Length: 455
Image (cartoon, rainbow, N blue to C red):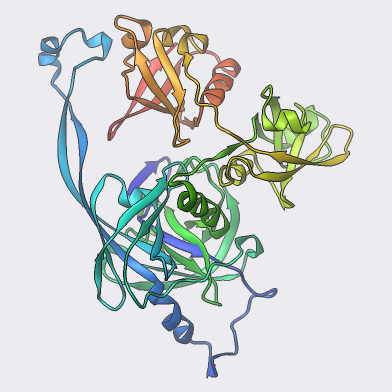
């Protein structure tokens, strides 16, 4: 479980899958297979065998701090090299998962449930325990795919999450706190939630169905028993449940899983634009006809957007016909689509005219760059976009360089600046060019998170 504390905690749970496609007007069905409702039991009897308990064991590296009085034994502290010791620590964890394909034994869960796991064991509802292997995963969107070999498995049908509406009923199934399978119910509270800094690509379904630790990777379903999302996080004081939970939409899950099955990894497509969400202030200053969407500030040369005809100053309002309210929502939509796929991008120009482009997404550019081109204090570091799409990897750090003095090390991953998530070099460049003063780089070093200051 991970948490981020501001005024409340946003907690990544441990696998909860949710995918829903509800009736045009959400209401309790009168009957199911001839049995009178309002009981959900008949539907759940068919669905719950498709939700599993995941137990993991493994080891991960942790950084052991060396007292200040002894740091001189390890060299110059200002260089940030060799001051602390790495040690391995064993761990155990619990989460949930959802069977997507009964014949092939595919199970989807959250990436954070099985990270660093050496052993993954699946417990089915009927009590069978099976070893699972990892097919692939994507930390940036927090999705992983497992596989087991067994007969008589039950898969959960996948709904079209684009059909969900606020107010639709939703049911969460998982194994909170390792208690065993638990079912809670509620409604869809909101759609398209982003900007929570829980994951790199966010387009969450929000629900008030009770979700707790251990639910991660579990299922969020509609009243038809169809998967509408993967439960992944909650927001609440001290990690407690207060009726604000988040699930990854089933359509995003399906797109990512298809890529993992085909390639063993997610080959994320890139649009090639930088920008921000449209606000009333931006709309007024730019004389825009809309007050929501993704405002394009920059179009990268020779990018997919550039070749299609999208320009700086455009406001992206739809992707494949679905409304885009924020730039984060745009990133979430594009981030689940594979390189080489063609999407329809609808924009509004300053003159108020709406235009739709067919854009073929390109593969992310993984070329290294010298960090001195970004900031003088990063001189001596060589950076590259992380292949997982969740930050910037430090490929090299020259000895006695400004970057070394700041504290950067080879292998570090820069994933934020001034508490704002950064996913690639282009975003870091844009932030540094738009702001001045002191910057706090959010750096992940093995299992340790730290801040490094540059000015």
